[in-house]
Length: 113
Image (spheres, rainbow, N blue to C red):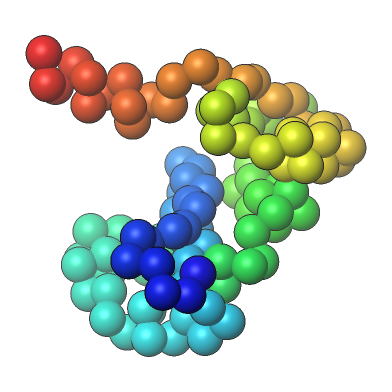
């Protein structure tokens, strides 16, 4: 997003890996400048262009990380998930759970009490 000082990204986190969708079409600079992520996650993280984020990418990542598709559940935050994402994931047969508050916001609220 040009001329915007706010960093926009999406992340898909599974038990075995983390996938970040950020930046423009050339994500090599982010990968080479992210030594802190490498220290924390090792080689268990990947980065893709922001524009490639969508239902197909999410379902592909989740299905490749989970050998039992019958047990796969994806949680989407109701206030930020798009209708296209919800419908796209339902089309490939993934069990969706719409949640009111993200687990991260909930943990921050508890920490700040």
